[in-house]
Length: 230
Ligand SMILES: *[C@@H]1O[C@H](CO)[C@@H](O)[C@H](O)[C@H]1NC(C)=O
Ligand SMILES: *[C@@H]1O[C@H](CO)[C@@H](O)[C@H](O)[C@H]1NC(C)=O
Ligand SMILES: *[C@@H]1O[C@H](CO)[C@@H](O)[C@H](O)[C@H]1NC(C)=O
Ligand SMILES: *[C@@H]1O[C@H](CO)[C@@H](O)[C@H](O)[C@H]1NC(C)=O
Image (cartoon, rainbow, N blue to C red):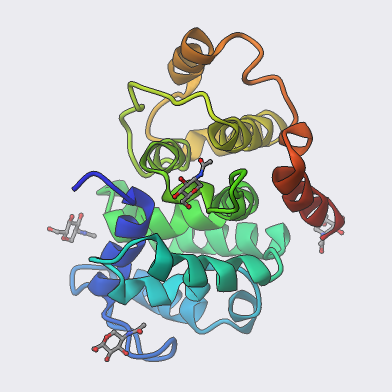
């Protein structure tokens, strides 16, 4: 089934972890001991518990077979939480990279996922919370979901097709602006996004990636104002 890839990745992680609660996590048995301790520390950290971190998305665990109506409340709760402080998440990412070196070298999917969710904390929160003109979460659209997985570095293959929607414009510009102002973050991706930029401008026009997401339309503008004031 080709839908909700990012949710599937979250679900993958949470099933893998088989969370009983934030404090009692089961981590895949092949993760190194130092990495296991680090993940346990992050999952029970009070900093990450009080903001929009991966911890707020635990509830996706049981939503594999369900659709937007059951997923939206989970995003509502994540999006209502304040954005995590970038200083906290980047310190957490640095610590994770040092404690999970061997796991990241073999590209363990769970650890790679956690690392990128921490590294891209800010554009990810914005992107997961953008809504379309009818008030639905952008990320529930399969094309937006594929694009988000790619720019987040969870999928090395760029999507071949880009729908030229306001949602995709907002997500792509959010990440493009982030890559521009945090150029070192591009090294966290499995592939250089430059050729994908060409795909986007070929399909959606040369100005598609040159617009502030804050000017797109009212709902997106409200998200941006919240972001800017947080
Ligand atoms: C998922 O479902 C299982 C079994 O019904 C339940 O024990 C568990 O608490 C649920 N997890 C979440 C995060 O809702
Ligand atoms: C993050 O760290 C920078 C540099 O140390 C500091 O100037 C900034 O105020 C910090 N931001 C927050 C939100 O704590
Ligand atoms: C653990 O096993 C999974 C599934 O075989 C694999 O994808 C992953 O890379 C392994 N992780 C480590 C750290 O070896
Ligand atoms: C808005 O997103 C929802 C899913 O969240 C979707 O069902 C709906 O068709 C989208 N509306 C528009 C106008 O794109």
